[in-house]
Structure formats: C-alpha cells, structure tokens
Image (cartoon, rainbow, N blue to C red; front, side):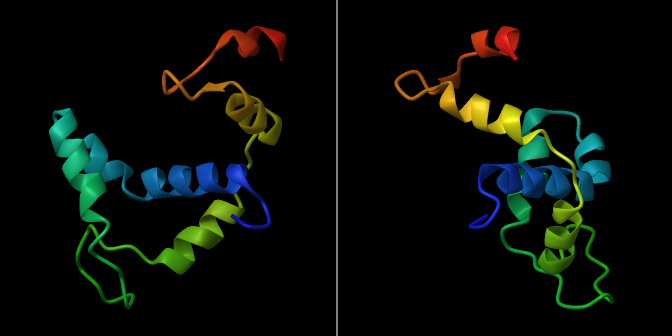
Length: 97
C-alpha cells in the first residue's frame, strides 16, 4: 500500500473476494455474505493443513494481489471524484475517460 497507493488496496480487496468466492456465492442474502466476509477478521491460516474453509493465508493473498492487473488511472480518477459530504463517488467522470 505504501509503494503502490490506492490501486494496491483494491487489488487486495479483489484477491480477498476471489479467495472466498465459493462461500460468498453459496449465501442467499446480504446478511449471509456479510457473515462470510466478517468472519475473516478472526481466522488466520497458520499452515497448509488448516481445514477451515474460512481460513486465509495473508502472505499468499498479498502475492496474488500483486499479480492482479488494475486500471490505476481509473482508481485515481475515482478517488479524485469522491464526494466526501455525501459519501459517494460522482460518476460523471466516467464519460470523460
């Protein structure tokens, strides 16, 4: 994050969602999805022998994230068009890409 900035943050999120894609797709509602995502705060995979489907190896996740291609121009443009007062991204900049 310190060397790559915001684009790396989005790469981590994307890698995280890919890692838990099967569990997320198995849920029927938003609360189920949030439960899957929230559970990750407490379960860290310490070895390859972990049988818990919600475990995560953060080193592996970071390496996976580094390989993800992302449009850095879009990320920085999106952040420059964030409306702090309303807490949403203005999408009018998409037409000017």
